[in-house]
Structure formats: C-alpha cells, structure tokens
Length: 575
Image (cartoon, rainbow, N blue to C red; front, side):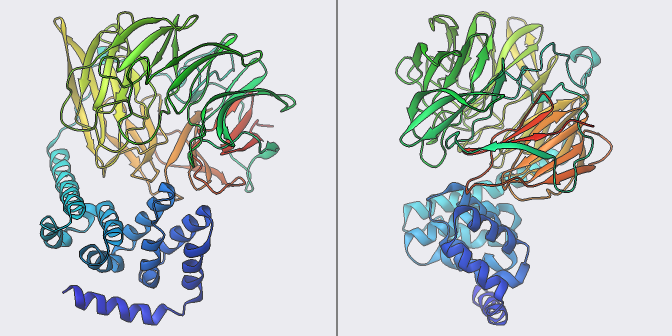
C-alpha cells in the first residue's frame, strides 16, 4: 500500500517539480536564514499536494540546530500529511538513524490525525534500534492519549462554580500607577489598566515613534517604572540586565548575570520593587540589584544553594515574584521546589518540598512563573512545576495541594490565572487545560476538577492567558495560537477560530481589546468579547531571524514590542 501511495506522490512530484514557486521555497529551505526557512515552511503548508516535492527538503531542514526551525518543519509536514505521510513512514522504517529519527519526530507531531499509520508504528516498536523503538512507543502513547482525552471530554459535563466560590467579575482591577514593574504587569496577569487607546489600528499599524537594536539576544519582556526601562539580553559571551532612560533611550548601565545562552538568549523578565531590581539568569543565579547603578546587593544560586534543577534541558526562565518582604522563585530542588527569600538580604525565609504528584511529567522546575491566589481563604503561590501544578502557603511555605493530570515531560511554560477559589491552567504537548477548585478538606486540601479540556479543544504552548471579566482568552495549539475565548466559571469554550498566522501567540489585554503577538511577527488587535472574535487591526513590525516570543507591553499610551535585540515603540493613544 505504501508503495502505491509513494507512486502517487512521485506522479504529483513530477507534475509540480518545475513549479517555480515550490522550487524557490525549496531553495529557501536549503540556504535561507532561520526566519526565511520558517517562512518557506509556512507557505508550503498552504499549498497542499502541490508542495509534495518539498517533503524531503522539509526533513532535511530539521537539523536540530534551531528548535524553532525544526518545529516549523514538523508543523508543515503535519499540514501536508496527505502527501507527506507515506514519505515519513518510509523514512521512519529505512535509512540512517538520523533520518529515521527526523521522520519519527514528524510522525509524533502528526499523532492521532493519521490513525492509518498505527500498524506501521506498532511494528517499529520491535525495531532493532532502541531509539526507533522508543520513538515508535511515544507516537503510540500520543495517539492513545488523544483518543482517551477526546472520549473523556465527550463524557464530561461542565460544572459551573457556585457564586460563593468566585470573586465578582471585573474587567481590570484599578491601579494607582501606570508603571509596569515586571513580567506581565503589576499583578502578573497580562492586564493593562490604561484607557484612551486606539480602538482600531491603521492599515499600516500604529505610528512608530522610535526603535533601537542594542538590547542583546533574548525573549525577556520589559519592566518599566520611574522613567526607566529594564530588560535582559545576551551580548557576546555574557548575559546582562540592561537599564535605559525611557525618555532618551540612553543606556544607563548593564550588569552581567550569566553566560550567554546560545540561540535562546536571556529569558527572565526583571521585577522592580522601589530602588531594587530582582532577576534570574538562565544559569540559575538570582540577583538583587540597585536600580540606580546596577550594583549587586545580594546573589543566590538556585542550583548550588538549593540543589535546583530544570524539568528538561532548557535553562531557567522564571521571572521572580515579589510579595511583601519576600522574593518567590522555583529552584526545582528535591527539598526546595519553591523558596521564599528576604528581599533585602536574600536570606532564606522558607523552602517547600513537594510530595509525589503522579507519574506524568518530570521532576524539577518548569518554565512558568508563579502567581498569587486566594483559594479557600488562604493566600498562596500557585505555580506550574515539572510534575504538575501546585499551591504553596504564602506565610509558611507549606505544600497545600498538587495536580498531575496536565504535566508533560517536555516543557511546561504557561502560568495559570486565578480568581477567588478558581484556577485555570493550560499546558501543551498533548495535555490540554483545566478549571480547578483547590479546597480545604479538614486540615488537608483536595483539588476539584470543574472542567478538563483536551488538547484539541484548548492547549496553550506558550504565550499565556488573560482573564478579562468572565472569560479567559488565549491562543490554542502546539506551536499555534488559535484565538479562543473560554467561560471562566465553567471551562466552556465560547468561541475559537483559526489563527491568522502560524506559530504561538503572546497575549496582552488593554482597554477592551486583546493584543495577540505571533511568533512569526504579526501583531493583531481583537475585541475582548465573549460574543465573537472581531479583528480591529493588524500589522507586522520589523523582524529579526528568531521567533518573537517576548510579551508586548503597553505603558503610558505606548506599545513596546521586543524581537531579540530589537525594541520598537508605537503610539497607540486615541486622538
């Protein structure tokens, strides 16, 4: 059967091999920059059968040098599965180990969308190569999990939270200052309280006020307060915290905090607290710096001081959380999954070890950042870790509760959102999302599942969530950002639409609208409405050759967009 399909593919290839558009895209896959390779893959994914000659080139481009490029190739092969599947199955069965592994990763990404491949995959669980046996097993696990999640979702009846278990819905909590002191704003929720902003964007986008290209490599967002802007970036062989004068864009100081981190660069967003700034380098060193001159007040090592570890090969990316006199961070250690440090001295206040949460996921810290919640009348820090989501008592550091069902063994990235007793959490890599109610049960705690959504319904790879009024908004999909609106009290999807651009999407709320920032560069403005998805503008800023993963910021009527070392400032005030 495979040979017959391959013959069909060959016939299609012959008919389209001289297609200049396809050939040009193939050449771009072979010789282009990472951004050009990703753009070529995105275009090929839309061509259907006409793109069949490009299937080998898409596999060739999966070199492992850039995960962003590899994922784009895999997504294109998944979209083209009508023609790519027989080629991938053939490659997975034969050839050198590297080629077989590439095909296997692409087949894993396709998963349950191609149930017809199961017999071939089952045979390969007995392959002589251990790596191929493991890959085949993982593909089957993914296919089985997708089927199981779909069945469970079909049988589940969403439960609406009782009125007493939630706080009244509010569009955006009021704030006395317009400052944006850290990751996702003053409440770490991605909600900007500014008003008087553009309700629609011009066709060519808002007015560009200025741009600079000196930040350094990285995906860190921005902290803005007191007329200064702070971020992190890799320059040469070192990673720095950088301070700029907001009015003049003159660099005030730059303090090294780690060795440079390859193609990823700096990731943690600094957190401001008066005259102090807190930041975590990718090597796991936590710093308290003086905002005036960048001098180090104190420093702790999450790996050396707390035996910390990450859930996978990628380095630390958490943004420190400030709460009263405490700095909260997540080393991921056996005896110190989470710690609270005195913000003035760095001395340990408490450390929290967590029990076994379940078999899913990996031990260690995740790539998310903690939030503050008030569940069951107790102030607590809610954080996603390698084995799932946890709640830790803010005053004592006691472990309160944990939930393992959405953990994955690759990377957990999205921070949860919470209101009252309810927590909404989302993950990716064939997991999904869930509305939870952690509750006291005597002296113990339990987690009540109000709704669990399978990955096909809603998953968030990275880009985050915003809770606006009665609804959660975010982008859904593995390496995708399909705009989605979910009723917070029930977990019911109110609307979901296909993304206007490939890649994941960061989200930011401001003045009745959601801004989606896609990793290929597109900026999109949409109404924050439970009724429907209504686009009010879009534009694509200047780009670099890497994914645009940094969260955008609005401060004083200006939209700040970062793309690696490039920072652009747009005027979004209504006239």
